[in-house]
Image (cartoon, rainbow, N blue to C red):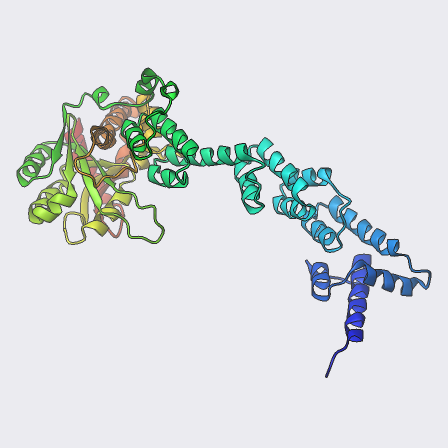
Length: 464
């Protein structure tokens, strides 16, 4: 009914005996039972030593228990059970192992055990761990150790190098707003972000950052050579496009629709403002780009849906639901879902006819549309403006070129596929099996075999 100090001592001795029996192999056990016994009953070396003395009926020597435990730990280390070994070393406050033990855990990939051991050993071992991570280019791991243990002043270069690597990854994905937030207004990191924008040829972002953070004195010596930037990416003038037309009024939209109704193939793409806040609603699709062989029309969906929704619905229905116009996209189902979510009241985004997703023809493992353009046309696309603010008006010239390119390049990639397919295998057009003759926005499925056959026949008449 009641306990006393004697009960606690007896419980520890019984737990120590159980520990000895388990380690000695006379009791079968599961998983982490040894660690649990030590944790729950607080068994220490003195308890194990007392039980060993009683069992052996000889003089009690503290080193016996320590040597017994160490021998078990060495066995765990030999079998690479590092986490259990570290737990026992920490529990019994045994600090004999050093840097070589830490290296073995890192090389075996047991990083949690290595970090637990270094934390137990203290700041000198933590510093060794950071240096090891840094030397192996494991910047995220090194940064986490620095943050958890307040070692930023000891490793300022590692801290900034990790921050810079994070900014670079975000810039490569076009997540400039997120990257800017990650700088926390640190001038050194802001200057690096400006350099990344320069390197990417994102001139308006350079101006925006320099103006916002008063970085006018940023070294011009860091700016990459213009010729290198020009040659790195595809430009609209290389596709022999006659012009990019901004469409934000009813008459301009009707003219664009008439133009496309005379086309056999068009390229489609959409853009919307990125939303980096978790849990927030996605932004409305801002623009739709529709490209023909010679022109690209950039349709202001936000303005037109507010001003003339009936005209917008009618005109886009005539394009998107026409069985006579082949629509090209790249991962266009994503755009379809976003369009339906943004403008659910419009009928034009509920059904589509004659779609060909270029992504399904090539099934590129990586690189996206830019990687595909590089493979087919020899040069990729500059994706730095992908996540820019597409709701600002007017759009910058660079934004317009980016948007137009994404639609226009689909036409050129398709022409390459069409011509290449005709020249091979007796004119068999393999890409036609990827055409979807009809698609509802909620159910993306191919049409029947009869529909596909009719689509192929019609395409031969249109394209040959």
